[in-house]
Length: 341
Image (cartoon, rainbow, N blue to C red; front, side, top):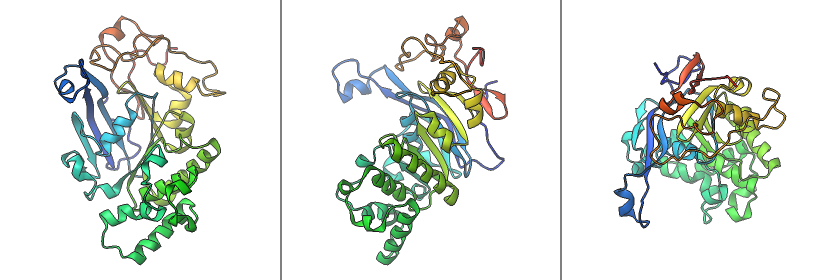
């Protein structure tokens, strides 16, 4: 039987449990209109039956090419959009029962925060750094006095390495790295249990990226948060994450400890990703996937999503879609022919 539960590093109750989470977007076949989309039989399968868990204090990386569904998945988990189906259990509560429009003011929002990809777009241009950092405190913990807010803002600025004199500045007066620090300070203001990071360094210069990544690594250790870290850069998740989930066209295709995924990748898609890392000794030869990705619109439930690009593909792959199965207690792969390249 397929293994539906991803590896759990401990016997603790997971902080986050996602079960068969699905998001399909209607695709209009005629003129672009809300009505044509709502009644369309054509569905874009952005996220298709994802099951995962994250333990307290664990850092999990979610990797895959652009368009694989990573951003949609984290927006479902963060209750920014409604799923088509599936469950999200966070801190022993079914947060999927809370309407998206009400979740931002629910008590669970304080424990589940996000750091966004584009720090310029995610910061209100009319807010100073102080306003931005203290906004979630004012919204979810309104009993704080002004002196308490000032003290907390100063503490957070120190935690993220932001000079206190920059708290009075607006976003256009800050550098990219400073904006990133403000966004991180805002996200940790209420001591969340889970921090979702959507490619938080991709828009930064390389030199600044390294500084912010090491800051995030230090903060995780200091605050004992769990991370769900989204990236297309495997070297980034290798630095920060205990475990990696590999996603392709709405499906998880491989999961396992970071060292295992890097040194013993089993799925051909993972092998191609790892082999693309320059000078990575475990995969000395580049593994190429030929052809174009399959359409995510009304995909066949029987055909492997990688069929047509995969060097292992045969008739079985065209007839039976592989599901995640355990190779050992901590490593799962969705492939009929793992590690045969």
